[in-house]
Length: 360
Length: 133
Image 1 (cartoon, one colour):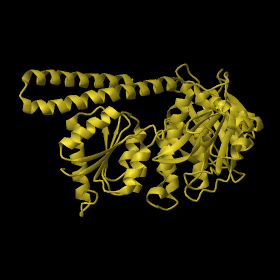
Image 2 (spheres, each protein chain N blue to C red):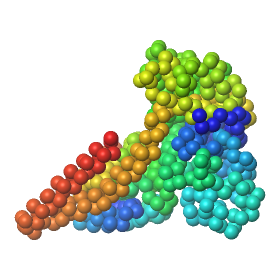
Image 3 (cartoon, chains in turn cyan, blue):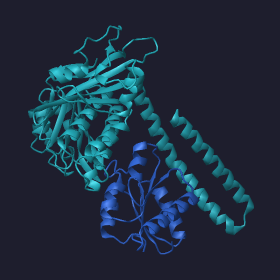
Image 4 (cartoon, helix red, strand yellow):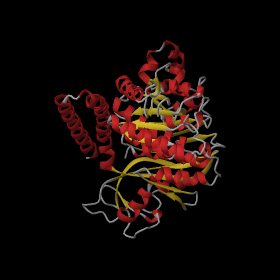
């Protein structure tokens, strides 16, 4: 388990007329939980505004980082990007090197260890995803930056596709929008109301509950019992989701197994957090990930970046060869044309190899 | 397609110039930009019959230009090119009207074929030929 705290979720001013407080709080909570798991951060926060411009008046944080939450939500200059000048990613080490940030860091020392990336969708900037208190290190690394950017990109794409932004559809479409967004994610996500009634579970959660967490297909996720690492069943009322609902506690990366623990059952990480709307309890949510999946994520991310970086120069080759082939049609140079055909064929093979490498 | 005014937004200067060269050889007029900010500025001025844009460009980082450009240059057919294979990119692009995704690496013929398909589809769905001068 990475962390198990209580009363460490803060949310305020979530009355977004554009999106609605509830879907926005759920989206932000899931992103923050995943940010903490993937980067091993003790703290994650989202600052945003529906207008896509500062001030970022909607704020949600999960985790305890001293006065960091208060610092972020009450900054004199609430746009984190303004602190780092033109540097789009805000790194603690950059802030520490900037004379103009000295007094700010004196007042809010927790900012010195922060990593914040912009949340963008389309050309709009919706705010910031911020992590702090890196476990086992004083500084977040490049891999943490990539993972945080990946999560911020997820949030940005989701926020850019809010129905009312594009088509002014009715409010009820927003819950459908949230479900469609979460259905694309491979982590199992379950949302319950303050009475522990299931409000939403995405496709991955349904797969977990029918295939992994329960012996009964399509079981209510509340009944999906889990065991700790030793195989001991977690008592009713003590699972991360149940604790989030009843005690308003958040849990990050609780290592567990499916009920009916068997050698084949994959180890899981369950994270959960209460949902608070305008300081009122509004249920809780749980994020369930296969542990191996989390460990593989950083490796997969590197391979995806490699695939992208290899395709760029390959595109130069395919475009240039194609244009040369078009020219050679009129120049009647058979030898050149055969050479260009071979290059084009080799480029095609290379692209197939990259696809296979990335798909593995 | 001769005479069509095309905006090409791509941060890789070599790919950008190759695309521009190809389109010019087909009789199109091309405006090249290397960032999302510049592209949005050009679109705001209007007059383009086609936009070809990379998905991720450095300034600002991670711009997914298509969604925003759709609101600025409404109706302009957009060809989105990317070396990424993320599902959320294709999902986001497919939700936009008059927009088509072309994965890198692509050949000159692939590009021209995609442009023709996009322009034909856009022209058919817009009786007045909106966005295609």
